[in-house]
Image (cartoon, rainbow, N blue to C red):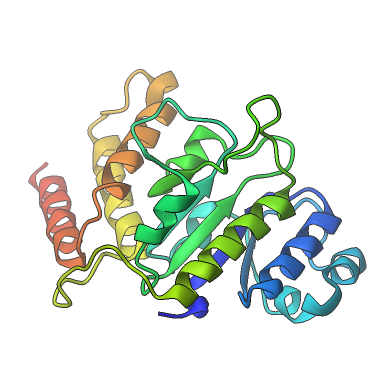
Length: 237
């Protein structure tokens, strides 16, 4: 169990100051892995480095991706943050539920852009969605404020070394890369047989598929079996 297993993903951040402040918040609690996806400002830039203050090293070694899917390939578990409850079949959790997470896995906390947060499509890549409790009349939190609340809470959990459940050490959970590969294989075969009809409903159908696969907490063996099934079904045509 280590802080090094945890990353913070900023999806389409809009303000340099917020990116820098997020890096500073991460360093306050000894987290080092920042991932930036399709940022609006040039990354990195002088304003980002200036507002990061003593956390310039986090900015300099952070990873920058063009798409969310590629950013998630080296993670096992994704927890997306949202200021509102989503009417989706996805596991909604609160801060206290973070105590149940296995931090021996590669865990990523996903944050949306300052203006619009995360879309339902982007949320569909997550295993859980997390709401930070706020006053109901004003739920919106600044990006760096959201991050620092979660960073502090997770830091306290890791250092307390308290976990509520255990799994057999012989069972290896599927990585996000394996899940993405399996899901994309399934989607390709479905596209080949013209499954996504009508076309205007394809995006919501894809969201639902990802929600189904990502919340199942599959093992790596189960993922391989399902990938073989999807591949075989494709060959039968």
